[in-house]
Length: 174
Image (tube, rainbow, N blue to C red):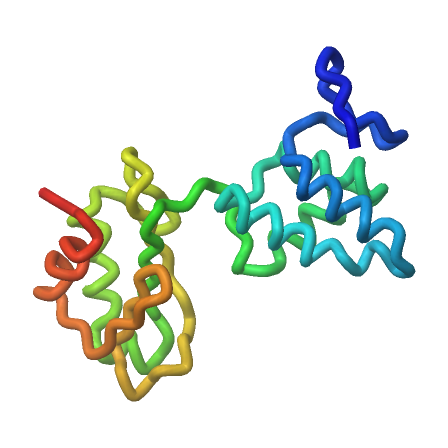
């Protein structure tokens, strides 16, 4: 699909802005050719988040135009699922389980220590874009409580004094 560089829109009839990369626009157009194309909204949102790390209002508006779905419905779907983020996440995503078993074993203190060391609040990203922190409700690893996951690595039976070592493993210096 060619782009009209002057107007920054697709050459198709959707007249969508050029915020999304060509491969995602092509995927959306492919989905729109299938029966029940609206049911592909969540995979489209996942594809965008995997590419950019988050969903911005600009991306959601473009999806609305491309998929012919009201922006309010897309926002409703995206806000319903906790896996979608509306702010850029850090290169290293720290997730602290605050489910019952982990919380009873001290994950609340772990969360506070991570926030203190990184100088950010929950669901924020460090200014250098290296770290973000979020809470989770359960990883299904209660026997390892309290659990922290950094990117895809699971840390079990974590103590507050281990937070600096975990951060150092990912290049944190302070």
